[in-house]
Image 1 (cartoon, helix red, strand yellow):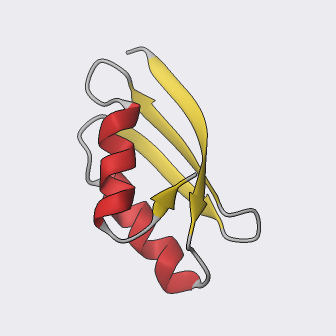
Image 2 (cartoon, helix red, strand yellow):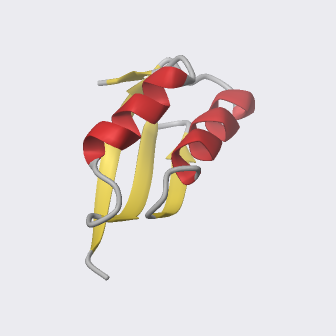
Image 3 (spheres, rainbow, N blue to C red):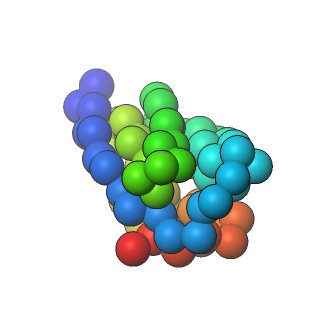
Length: 70
C-alpha cells in the first residue's frame, strides 16, 4: 500500500471544535490512515493511500466543513 504523508496549511481554524471538524472530515475519506491538526501552526498532517485518496479529495473535505486550504 503506497502511503503518502502530506502537511497541509489550513486557514480559519481557531479552536478545538475546528480541529475536530477538520480531522473528522478527512478521516471519513476512504484511504486516509491518519489526520492530525496542529492548531498552533494551523496545519493538518495527513497520511493516506494514494491509490484510494488524493489531495483534491482531502482539500474538498476540508472546504466542505468551512475551512480554506492555503
